[in-house]
Image (cartoon, rainbow, N blue to C red; front, side, top):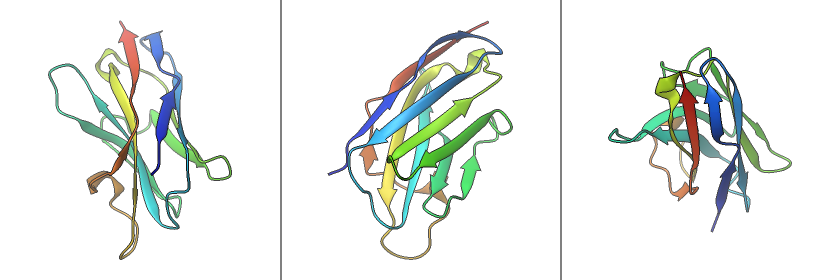
Amino acid sequence: QVQLVESGGGSVQAGGSLRLSCAASAYIYVTYCMAWFRQAPGKELEGVAAIDSDGSTSYADSVKGRFTISQDNDKNILYLQMNSLKSEDTAMYYCAAVPVFFGSVGYCLSRDYVYWGQGTQVTVSS
């Protein structure tokens, strides 16, 4: 069982930056996807950014050019660097992971994730 623990959320003014971290308690699998999702009050869960075991990344259009997802494989930590934050980025941010047992990795923002963190709140004030 993999446990995911997020950190790094907080309050920031519009235009500011935050870096989220997600520590995984165990090895996921040789091939996997990891992603950041967010959910604002009254809105659906949204996939924000994802990365696979090959290092390929994908982003929601709303964050392209502002957010960067990365991973430290040695430490089993996933990051989300968020720059030029906007009020509409305010949400609870969740880290998620899924092993990929069959086929090639990819399409990480479209997969069903099995491991989820508890979330970290990001609040952007204008």
